[in-house]
Each structure stands twice: as C-alpha cells, then as structure tokens.
Image: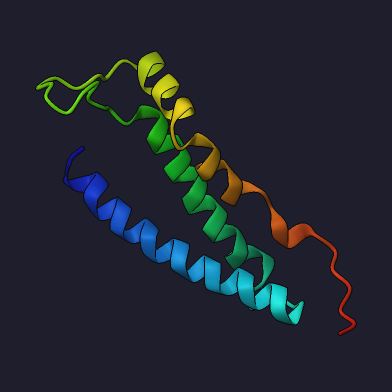
Length: 102
C-alpha cells in the first residue's frame, strides 16, 4: 500500500461520513438532501473503492517482506475479507419509494 492509497483512504473516510449523514437525514425527513446526480457521486466513489480493492496487494502474513500482487489472489483475498461491507454502500437506497406522510 503506497501513498496514493493512504490519501485515498482518508478521502473515502470523509465520503463515508458525509454520505452517512445524508442518508440519515433522508431517512428521518423522507426527502433527499441532494438531487439524484450528486447522490450518485457517493456511489461512484464507493464503486471506485470497490474496484481499487480488487487490485490491492496484500501480505500473506505480517512478517512476510513480499506482497501478493497477482489479480486472482488479491481478488479472492478481498472477497474473503471486507467485500460484503464494500458492497452494501453500492445498493441504491435513494431509489426506494418512501411515503412522505409523517
């Protein structure tokens, strides 16, 4: 993991916090705080992170000096790890039709 991924992780953490706030606001007041285009920007960043994690190298154990960089091994490692947690934000919740009566 290089410098790019460290900055990417910080940026994505900010995106996660702001999207969580927006979705909570949407759930509480049953109206979006943003239009469909800006809401899809969150999903675009989550999708980009999803793809980056498929290619991200890993060390088989912490003591190992070499990283595994073969796509099939990195993708299987990702699927066995945090794949499901990265898949959940890609579900388009803004397309749910909610009743606006409170």
